[in-house]
Image (cartoon, rainbow, N blue to C red; front, side, top):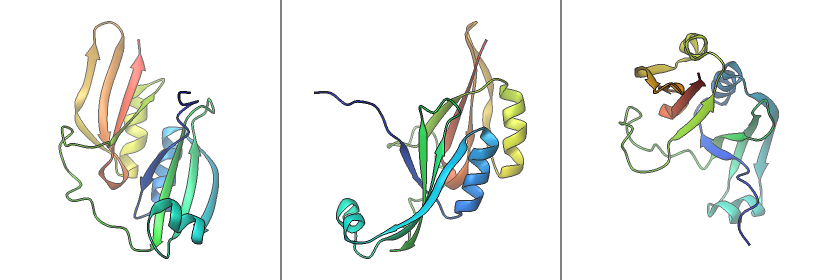
Length: 145
């Protein structure tokens, strides 16, 4: 059997409230917050003494979710420089379809977003750009034309 669906993407953050505010401004909805800890969490993550605050963010269509996690213990480990280029190995981009790319960028800038390069037109199909969001993660924005 193959997978049923992709359930969520997890992002470890240093400031959970700021990350929730960023993704709320983007248009995601806070589904809930919780603290997870205990033997099942330690076993699942392969770490000892995990205590982690999480916020589950849901896309407006209900099909996509982000799990934002702030570790209380053990302390989060830095992944290196946050201003790494997009061609760095590993997963670090989440793409969102938006109605108005310019408006979305304008709303995210006060929440710490940084526009990388500029807004590009792909044929007669899309306007596309990347912004750097919380913890340096790349956020892709796509407006269908």
